Length: 353
Image (cartoon, rainbow, N blue to C red; front, top):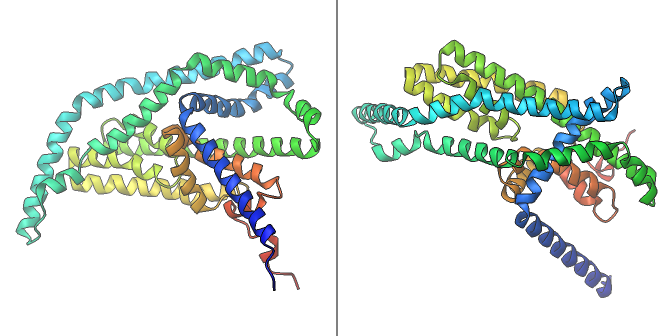
């Protein structure tokens, strides 16, 4: 069997060209992340706002009035968010040195007890392992990233306004410029529906997670329960590792306040909450509509986090869904979309008897 060298060379050149284009695009996105992050953030807020915006118009509310109501609603939620959390963050930051000192004393006691049991562990290493600094540094990075994005409030609001104003005209424009208008409109609607569905379900489950954490921590009388509930709400948007990171500060604080018994109860509460909402409810509510494998979700978390920072981690799943749908609409790239998905290709599925 002879090998067609020209075909091999053509395939190789196509692969190298596509790889080079991918590297250039990724490098450009990383270089422009300071501009890209607020734009993507505003775009996804706009997608969330599509449903209430069109619902208000169906109620015969003028477009301008409906738009003002949406913008005021966004500003109200933003101010409420800042008012509820700002005081707690300042108080906790001021008390952090005291908490660190108590935690260090408890760690030294643990080291002494282990040494009496015949287990020798360097105290400095154990103190570094049980420290509030690293999880709080991650929390500070995430909050500062959100703050930097929200500092561009005017830019974000302007993008939201223009996207909402143009939303009704997008299908018509796609129909006018596309060679295959039905496919283009179908892709647009599919992307819009998938992102809205994902964000709506994830927001609901994250809210329930945060509320449950707050209630449990209030029952246990752990300080700053509202702050840890907010952290659980935000980090629940980060797949796989977000809920684990959110639990660390509250568990360490319960250890500082009341000792190991309360730390165990706090950990148990987080495990139960994440099992109910993350392991049981989320797969049932999400179903198979997202079409992303677990491995791809985790890799997308790393990839988008590297390019766009913490905001990229929060938006990793919606961004990957958009990429998958786009790849699925080209014969040359459909195989990549298949690799990203969870379903088996038709050629590999079992034939029916």
